[in-house]
Length: 462
Image (cartoon, rainbow, N blue to C red):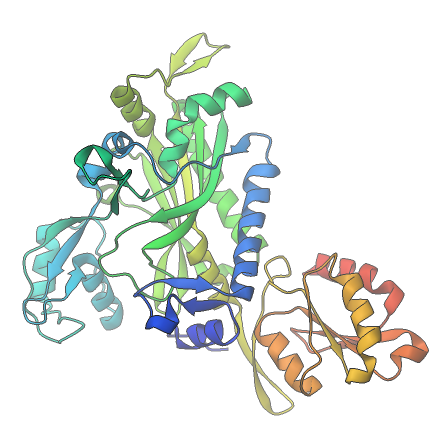
């Protein structure tokens, strides 16, 4: 199949089948807000559960945390977000719309297939490139922009009943700081020795200038972050370990190797405190985009919070009889972006009985619905429903007795259900059902009493 070159088929399927809906749709919507429907929330939960199992539960060296969305504003002053968490903002003088300068240039380069880089450019260099290429405003088509100015991405709000300076708080722009400020608490109660990691899944909020590409860049999103604490001497080896670990997990959940790549940041791209950063990029229908960031943050965060809070956040190494602030490796992944990547990765089409079939080739662990139960006619309802009740305790299943069997197969294919079970006229006599495979359309005749064993074997192969 030819790879998708735009998001329209994905967006259409997502709405039509209940993965993602426009937020506040009955009131005309609210720009760049999305609600996850019945299938979307199942898919999202599968992603989070699999990540938590792989990165926390299955590892002896990692524990979890769920920190507050609201934190003392001093947290964000110490971390540098208040003073430096900003994007390059430009206004179109003609139509008064606002744009993110680096994204304007990035999208132009991708469209024109130019051999140019955006990473590491200063604001002045960004403006020079935009003027050199005479890049037009995406809204009105004119090239008439203001100079670049910095725009802080954090959402502000007020805590308490009176809006005054002392009650100012921010919606967190990342989950990581909740881990850093709890470092001492976690290390004390878990009694973990270096190296060890702390993982967290939670909402974050960024007042993006130009959100877009469906759920790729949104103002409200969910992160799965790990902060892995280790000694400075071992930090580069653990940086490599987490690159390999993250890459292998993507392969395990069905992401095709040709659809992602690892891109090492050049020196000029690195934050002033970072020793190394690698992005795992995915080939979305709109082009390559960052999926997962793996950063070597040194001991910057713990140092900042130690200085600003006046609290001792050092780690005491019993063996070496020394106290120090550990280095940190941070693999940070967005749930929403991974969901979009999985939809794009799974979207497939072929021809069945001279008809084009669109389907989602989800890995069995990811599929929001594992089994589709289909009585051939409503006369088989009682038998079919008994099978459904028995299987749904083990596998997320959906019962469908509406429409022709062919249409039901197509619907189940389109939402990525790996297997359909058809209860037909012979089932009552021979106690067998027909199991149809999504990817091949192959059909097996299986005894009802053996269905759980059959699927145990089938799912182990996927």
